[in-house]
Structure formats: structure tokens, C-alpha cells
Length: 222
Image 1 (cartoon, one colour):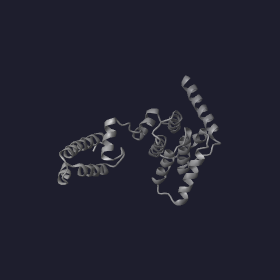
Image 2 (cartoon, rainbow, N blue to C red):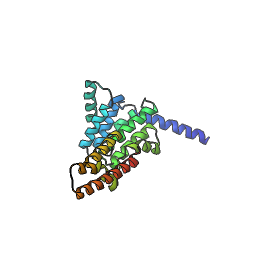
Image 3 (cartoon, rainbow, N blue to C red):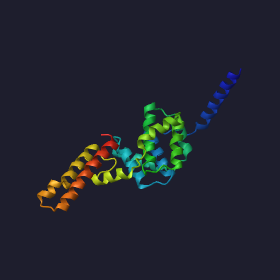
Image 4 (cartoon, one colour):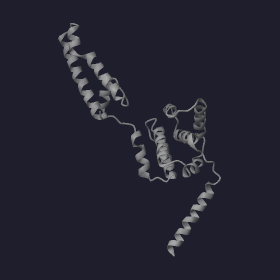
């Protein structure tokens, strides 16, 4: 008997939930994506980083000029939406699990755009995942690759020495390593008639370049 009571209660709750969301507009496709991104960006304090991230998200898709303009409009509209307006669209999302994951990836990229995770942003992306029916751990896992890398002092110095960024492609880092070696190599100083002190400084710099490159390779995994 208890089982049937619980079953009836569950069905009743589901019915009430559907009635509550019945009058909500359902957003789909890029309209849902960019309204959600705009809502996230505006949840704390929108910055230039968020707008740059928006441009990157738009560039990821083969959109026509008209579709690009619509994407910007949806983003702006998302900034003024109440959070609850997105609930029905996410609870009744028609895409597959992979499409849900891609949606949440874009959300994580947007909230990490300024390398700062605000409380409201964090709550929102978890709420979006909850409306998908996902568990907390699964939502968190999707966001792991987009967390900013907090660098040690040694790592930062190595990047500065090779004149590269933390997200520079491996091929570019290799090019810069060779370029810096050629620039500071002792043989170059000797051939130009440099003093013993200059040769010694070039030798020290060459050693530092080798060490910096070795550290970056270890940290970046290539």
C-alpha cells in the first residue's frame, strides 16, 4: 500500500510540475544557447572577457551573417531574462546527452572567461545541469577542462623567457625555444667579438632557456 501511495504522490508532483511550466516559452537551438550565455555573463558583472568569449562561441559554428546577428540579439536578451524563464527549455530539452554536455561546456567556458568564478555563476551552471537531470559530480566534470591554470612562479618565468602564453600551441612554443636559443647562443656572441663577460652571460641565458623549455614541456605534456 505504501508503494502505491508513493507512486501516486510522485505522479501528482510530476503533474503539478508540468502545469507550472506549461505556460513557459520553450527556447531551442542557438536561441537557448546564447540566451543562457548572456544570462550567465550578466549574473555577476559582464566584462570584456565575456564579450570576447561570446565572439569565440559564435566563431565555433558555421553561422550566416543573419544567424550571427541573431546570436548577438539572443545574448543581449538573455542578460535581462529571469532565471526561471529558462527552466522549461532545459527540463524539456530535446537534444541527446552529448548535446547537453556541449551546452554545459559552453556555459563553463563563459563563466571562466574572466578567470574568476562568481557564486551566482556557479549556482546557475549547476541549476542548468540539474534541470537537465544531471548529478552534481557530472556537471562539475564537464567544467574541469575550462578551469584557468594557476601558474607557479617558475612556470610564469619560463613562459616569459620563451615569450609564450600558457595556452600557446606546442608548435609555437617549440619555435620560440629555437628562436631564443639562436638569439642568446654563446657562439653568436663569440662570432661578434663579444667580451668574456658577455659570453658568460649568454651561456647562463642558454642554460635558463633549456631549463624553461624542459619545465614547459613537463607542465604542458608534450
